[in-house]
Length: 489
Image 1 (cartoon, rainbow, N blue to C red):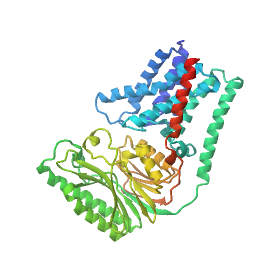
Image 2: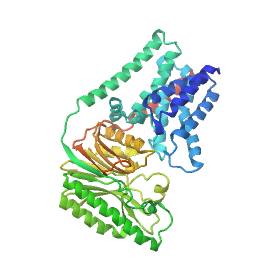
Image 3: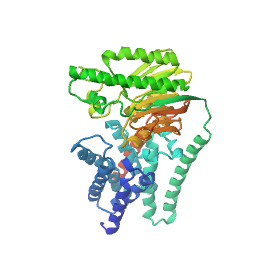
Image 4: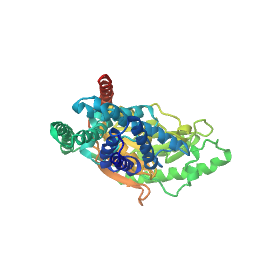
């Protein structure tokens, strides 16, 4: 049946969808958009309804993700169109199966399908967990605590389940025992999750802290042509090297000087953003001698985001995090495992996927680099290693800075680590193992390019770091289990 009423639901759902992910996220919209889109789908022919929802999803995605997904030209709308197919599948599955399953079981198709879609994308896509509905609930700290048990999937399930529950009651005019039972089951489930999360926050123990500092980007010190030259596939000509070397030396002097200042202000751990410090391979040893002397003389742990320019190599960039301890020794050197798809991936050496750790008087330190934070399986290695503090050199832009900060905070909660994230052209932040923000600096507006924070020195063991995506796999099994009986009904 097609009616004006159903298209009103479509319009409301489409508008809400524009604000339930991407650049303009409103947390409540993520709960409400499926309510109306499911309503539209159930009032129309399955194929026609799915086609129209796909169109709405494509339009919403085109606007909401503009500047977020780094694809040029026609590749962007093509990618959005393909994504919209995936976004539409849970609605299509619900439309086909909801009336073939009894009672409350009919409400589970949509959240199960949504979790399965997100899980497949996270495993198969180079953009990993970008776009998960769980990220929209940043700021709801009690709900965020569920991530330490189920990862993103548990939160995504609860948010997605709301739509079919409301429709179940709506179709019964919110009257009668079935409608009341469905609303009660959902309300009790959500209430227990929020209560448990609130209790985890309320009864978290106080631990010792360490003074840390994140050094920001020196705006205007070096021209962008020099900063971005390493990302250009064109081979470096010999005449270019002197100018680049001079620019790199300016960056080296700046970060060493700023780090000395923060160490003398009693910072015990200093972190630099991703590839803010550039150095030619031939000059790396000389620079490391200076960095090791600074760490030894100032008695500080120095985590450096370094871009090694491998002139003449097919992969010209080695993007890494190097930790120097207060004795002046190199504690570890880690190469970024997941370069960002596009220009960075084309020119970068890839790491081995093993985040390193180092014991210190301030807990066990670990490090990954920027985009690595979007891959939960990689970060679970940090949780399983019982790291206490995660140090993250990062680089963003003003369009994605909030989105990327949010994703990093969820990794801290999932693995029970304090996190210090130093970000060029984005949000630097310090958070505790429960996702509470302790300090933040927006690089583009900060006049003093340093963020200081007292970071807890003890992490928290989490179930998710041990069992991984068990909940997501249970959702896969649940969806397959629902499809079989529904097809036989």
